[in-house]
Length: 124
Image 1 (cartoon, rainbow, N blue to C red):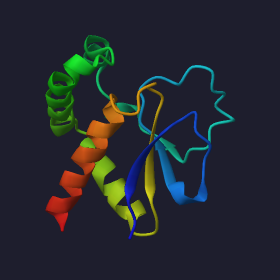
Image 2: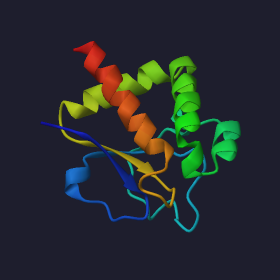
Image 3: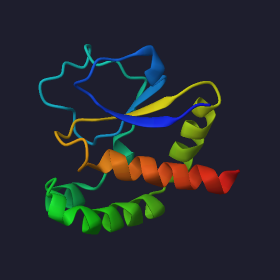
């Protein structure tokens, strides 16, 4: 069974990653574009610059940020297409969402992964 997973862009690519989607709006510092192994860059699915700056990866703001970012996802005109792409890729393997944040527990990719799984569950 295929899964959606998240991984920092600074970690090495592995075959188990499957289809790798970069989900940050900004290109990660210190990573050359020709060095990062990814299949697609979906910067339009990332949090808005205002939300990202307000959040500042502050753990105390995670609940507020989660609500704000989920609202953005629900109102993002590219969200349905993104969900469809992920759904299609999961038919043949895993999907890995790539992000650059330092924290593995306080970042937008966690929220995006949760939201995606909820969206896919409603399609079944």
